[in-house]
Length: 432
Ligand code: 4AD
Ligand code: MG
Image (cartoon, rainbow, N blue to C red):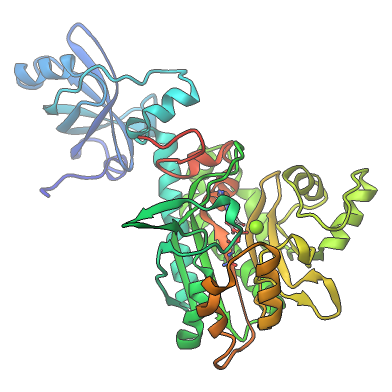
C-alpha cells in the first residue's frame, strides 16, 4: 500500500510538509513552464502545481500530456494558498502517470440519458461518489439499528414460486424446463423465519416489473425489510419511525458537508428529528384532502399526487394506517372493528417524496387469507406452505419494508430515484 495519504489527509497538512497522493486527473491546464493538475481520489480533490525544472523533465512532460481521468501518483510539498480548492496545493517533486487516459467522453452539460448510457464512467462524478457514500452509511445504519434491537439477519430466496405484492409486477424467469419469479419482497419467507428467530431483517435486491415511468419507480431496487413475532400494528409503526430517525441521525453524523454539496440543507433534517412524527388513519387523510379540494373516494390506494397534496400539510414524515382492505395485498388483515379497513401502514416522506415504507400486521386467519388469495385469482395450492405457518403455533406478527432508494432520494433531496442506485434498472433501461 506504501505511504500514500488520502487527499483529505493531505489537505490537513501544513506549509512545507511532504505529501504523497494518488488518484485520477480531475481538471488540467498548462501554460509554458507550468501545469495545473487537479487530482481527485475517493476523499476529495487537490491542486498540483507542476513546474518545469522542479522535477525530472520526463515527469513534467507527462503532466502536460495527461488527459483528465488519467491515473497518477504524485509526491511533493504542501503549499498553503487561499485560491486553491481546500486552501492547499502540492508543489510536485515527482509526477508519475500510471495510465494515460483516452479522451474522456463525458464533458459538461450532457443529457441525463447520455450520463445513464455512460453510468460506468459517470459513477466517478462528485455527485454520484457523494450519493454512493451516503448510501453506504444508510445501509450500514440499517444493519446497526436492527442488530442493536435483537434482530437476526435472515436471507430469503430471490427466486420465488409466487407473488407477494400482486401478480402484475412479477418478473418471470426461465427455470430449467419450468418458470419461476424474481423476489418482489422477502416477506412470506420472513414470516416463516419468525417462528425460529422471532425478529429478523434483511437488506436485499427486490424486483418489480413496474409499468410506470416515474422519478420514483425502479424495476430493481433494494428493500430493507423486518418481520417480528408479537409485534402489532402500533409496535411496528413506532419501530419504523425509530428506524428512519436513526438512519437520518447516522447520515447527519457523517455527511453534513456531503448533504450540502447535494443541495440538501442538513438543518431541515435535524428539525425533523426533534419532532414527533404523526400517525393518522387513511380516512383522516381523505378528510384532509377533501378540505384541500381533492375528493378521493374510500377504497383506493393513494396515488402519488394525492400523497404529495396530503404531505403539503406536514413537515415531517407521516404514518398513514388503515388503508381500504380491498385495495391491499392478500396478507393484510381486516381491522376487527372496521372490516373494510386493513391493519396496515405506509410512511410518507415530506417534500413531495411520498411513500418510503410499507408494512402491516399479518393476517393469522387462514380463511381470510384463502379468500383474499382467491379474490386475486391466485392458485391457493401454491401458498400451502405459507398457510402452514398459521397451522403450527401461529402468533401475531408484523413487519415492513423500507425502500432504500426512495429513502436515500428523499434524505439527499435528489430529483430522480435513478441517482440513488449505482446502475438503475427501469422499464426503458437495463444496461450498462
Ligand atoms: O409497499 P411495498 O410494496 O411493501 C412490501 O413489499 C411489503 N411486502 C414489505 C413488508 O411488509 N415486508 O414496498 C415497500 C417499499 C415501498 O414503501 C417503497 O419505499 C419501496 O419498497 N418500493 C419501491 N422503490 C423503488 N421502486 C419501486 N418500484 C418500488 N416499489 C416499492
Ligand atoms: Mg406500498
